[in-house]
Image (cartoon, rainbow, N blue to C red; front, side, top):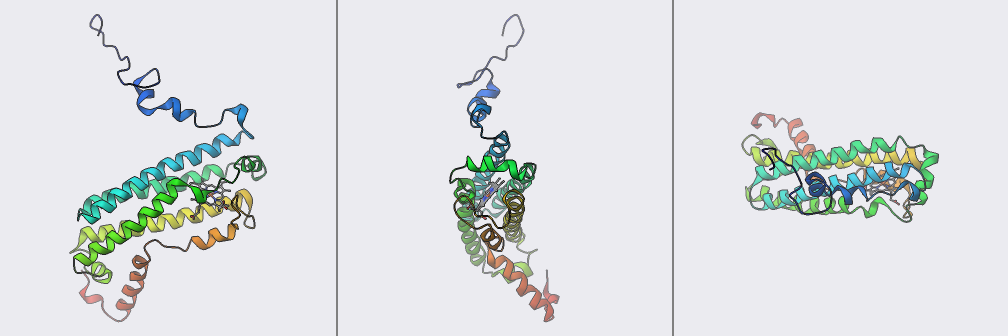
Length: 241
Ligand code: HEM
């Protein structure tokens, strides 16, 4: 403070002229993309920004899913639902960002692709971590349902009585669905960029990505819908609620 006027000089440790830059570490963050002189093609900036920001959103998704797993294990189901909402939105953002890649010309993408070496989405740390945590979360959810003396059919038939677990089941279904939507959207981007008959940078035929669209991390949450439809067709809708 000088002469009654406040100063806003930085008070945080770190690099950068302001606390904004120091807190967000913008010096380091903005140095993570190639300089124009290093680029094989100017679209490398677009490509790196989409991928790097996807990794950040996936990092957040994985972090929230870890907390959702711990919360489910400890019976804090409402907390788990809250974390899952964030993870689901993060996956939606990662899906939306794919549209930016469709603004690259397929011909001009090739110099970018050559610069990737063996770089492949199969090695995405954010995606792989999220997928691992989904497996643990699925197990924690099944235990929580069993601990209440329920199976999934009971839970869905009496969702209003067990609203917390029902909301969790629906957020998990949402996550599984959003992963499938990401996979389909990603496949369309891949078709636009390199075609459906191409082979990836790690030798995977693009066709294999099509098969992954049908994979589900929580298959029981999809099978239960078939069971509910069968029960309803057999006339069992009276005891709903
Ligand atoms: C022009 C853009 C893109 C192309 C041409 C492309 C191409 C491919 C190909 C060919 C594969 C199969 C694996 C291999 O490389 O052999 C793959 C997998 C994958 N890619 Fe991409 N990709 C693009 C953008 C992205 C973006 C923005 C992300 C964001 C994280 C991403 C994440 C992944 C992931 C996670 C996989 C594994 C698929 C799965 O588990 O379902 N890709 N990609």
